[in-house]
Length: 119
Image (cartoon, rainbow, N blue to C red; front, top):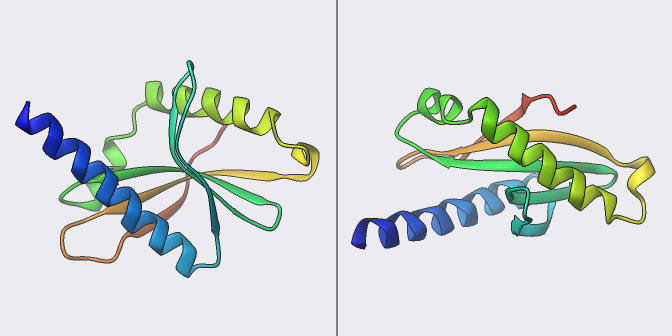
């Protein structure tokens, strides 16, 4: 049980750091931990007409973080993103990108654009 609580707190802290990194780049965080029956999105950020669907991974290295996003995760994220996008009034003019932010020990979060291509 203690491991689950520790992992939960680590996830929240990592998403907070990732949010700071995106805000420093001029993005506005429009949703955190967006949950649907189809899946969950860690962060949704927006700057103008560009919407970032962001998966946050806290790992020891960038390679481990990148390897942690499996094809099944991609499908889950895409399905949740489709649902979120369908509820936006300006859906037709939005550009969507699937990014990852790796939160590594003692480093500023690393933003990896286009970690995968949505359908």
